[in-house]
Image 1 (spheres, rainbow, N blue to C red):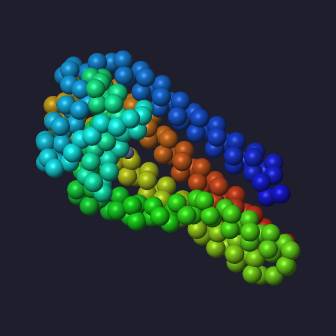
Image 2 (image 1 turned 90 degrees about the vertical axis):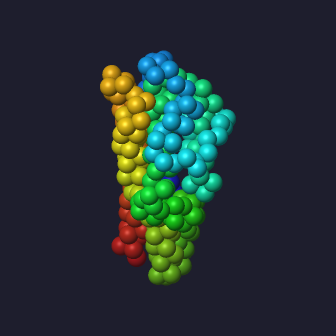
Amino acid sequence: MFFGWGYLLYVALPIMALSFLASSWVKRTYARFSQVRNSSGMTGADVARRILNGAGLNDVSVQVIDGELTDNYDPRTKTLNLSRSVATSTSVAAEAVVAHEIGHAQQDRQGYIAMRMRSGLVPVANIGSQAGPMIVMLGLILSLFTRSAFGYYVALFGLVLFAAVVAFQLLTTPVEMNASHRALGLLAENGVIFPEEQEGARRMLRAAAFTYWVALFGAILTLVYYASLVLGSRRND
Ligand SMILES: [Zn+2]
């Protein structure tokens, strides 16, 4: 009953449409700049080693993993995980992806505060995204049938749990923007990228950034929707 047309129309559909737009933009931009060879002729793995050494991150190891666009930096093991296509490609797209992930390695090394706060929020945000909505529903059903304030407070608790997801996304966006900003600097400082390729790398990173804004917007929209349900139920008492 709570997941009626309102939820579908004002929350689920806009989020789905925007997520689809964002991911197809990333894929299209990546496909396009995967075709543009970088003038240094270095593969993603070469670029990684060059930038890591240049940035004094010699102890970060580079590992090749499966999947497409699965590239990530793992702060626990200090490992830069590169997807096979990025590691072996000599494209502008590959160097942008590699430099972005090294941006995260640099954040980790410098103890970048937003990144540390985000890591701390991961467990709560995971619980919040799964259990939060269920607890909200449980509370609303309780207050509907028992007509007591208890259900309302249960729903409120679910709302606070889900707010952790919003907080997580609020931290993710600046962490990602910062990693991309560092990426462009790292590419230029280490002589990996030539000025005429810079625009391609920038476009790649801009498309990737859009996906984080969409995730943030989706989390806020969902929270607002649940909040309107919970506060609305209070008013109907
Ligand atoms: Zn990132």
